[in-house]
Length: 404
Image (cartoon, rainbow, N blue to C red; front, side, top):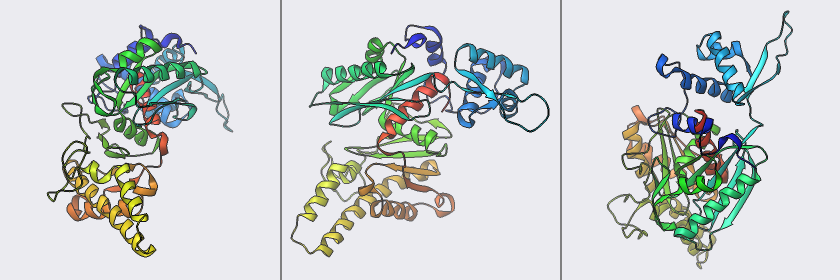
């Protein structure tokens, strides 16, 4: 499927990506009018955000919701219709006398998004998604141990194949990558893939000819929870898989850190009493306690023992509780520092929900001040296995349209 007017060579899309790039300086959701010199781009995004969140509305409804004048809304709507970003969808049903209002909405059926999730060690997953984050088509590419340039080639080919699978114009491509990713879409370091200073954004754009945004996979996942999970603007999402990482939103702003490594909590040592040996060479890293392969190995060993069933179950609970307590120790300091309102955990529910999460909650509450932090919510994500893919859709929506 051709990318049409959204190629990386210029035009409307390149203007959008320059204005609304996925940066820590910009709040994800515009929520007020601004000074005249900054007004037009911001107010276009404000109109789109209002429609994205609320669905079809009349011009008068949008004026009331945004605080902009009806004259301004008329001009902005005309511009957005000309750019094919919004469309008139019919008349409002009403029993009142007079002409019914014309409803407008984002042109949801005319654009799709391509998302890539590169976080798995066995396969690269990708999907064509709607603007509402629903998966239309899914493709997987086995890694077969590929690293370095071979892994880059697999990611680029998967993106190109998905662009061809799209049934309408592709608005952009979002990529969730493991490792440390800077604001230019360069993967500074992803050891499992053998990547150092890889311009992944540039490599995919060159072949796919569509605007591309790349972020760490946990930073993508937190956006899915924010936009599609109804989470608050103060949020930490802890992603537990082969490794452990986190994405952070504070005051509606993505938090990346001075070296783009905010949320890299997996290799922080938890406690002073040692612990399991981590792949990084240290003992007691959170990842060594909590990573899925480690937990499954310990649980399998318990189940394979000759212990009575009741003792096997007790041993299982001890393993999960110990991991949950270490997670709680890590989270308590972050809750205390940032006064977060919500922490969401993403990963295999059969391991994380129940004993492990309960232990983490108990530990956080025992180690923080109830007066200030007692209301923090810690829960499992309901976004499922597609959370990173859905997050990459939000990256594109935020980066190119200014909505989330």
